[in-house]
Length: 181
Image (tube, rainbow, N blue to C red; front, side, top):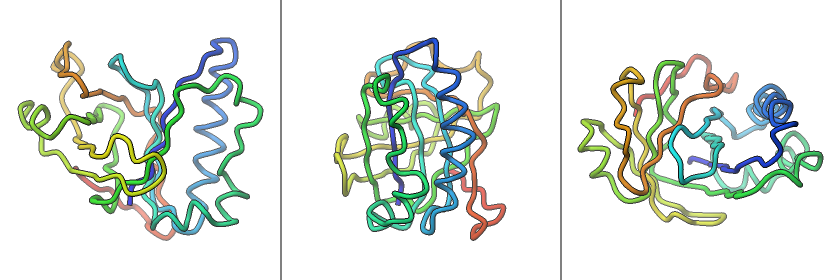
């Protein structure tokens, strides 16, 4: 299943420090939790969506309800909480592992259907919300491996473009796995 966490951050003075915490401390802590398989963090390139997106491949909802998750990474944002806005969490089925997005690739996410992604010559993967906020109910992910200048300036409504902030971390239980979407 795919676990997504989205948010924006409102304090420019501490945003770099928060990003270091999230990327260098929180993601490695999460990937060490039993039932987490991959974790990767993104920053929105297009407007109209939360600035940050983290995508994790996990076994299921029970992983997020366990003590190990709470102790190692779930909910440890107290220092930053006052600056976190537009925060959303969802659990999706339909995709076992999130695609690994490389440094020169982008992730496109659609909440309006697969057609806009297919129109860009991509092969989207569909996900269906099954837990947490359950909104949007459906999402489609696609890897865009074109140079930055080849990315359309105006994406269809409901389609958002993300650049990877981190490499995809993979659990030691899943060494070297790279999935393609």
